[in-house]
Image (cartoon, rainbow, N blue to C red; front, side, top):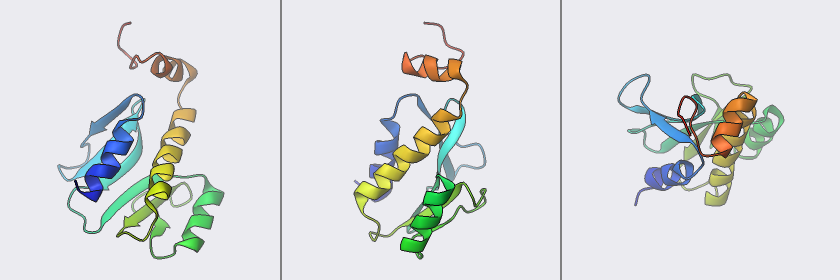
Length: 127
């Protein structure tokens, strides 16, 4: 198993996650309720993830890990980080930041979409 595969397997376990390649065949996005919470290049070495993050926490992480937590590449630098996964960042932290990104995006979805996801039904599906 590769690091990228392990990271994606963790993210795929979250409720309602869907995968997409909206930009090209190299940039994988993971979405909840149609909104992106994780982006990654399937070819980057080392692995890089873009994740949504609370702005204050993003600054703290960038200060603590200046070479491994960067302002989000091609994203809103206030709300997104790019994690460089070369083995420096603790695995538990990476998984927690994936969960944090998912939770932030989920919290911004309309109530009806969150309710549908809580019931295990994707928006637009019938129960």
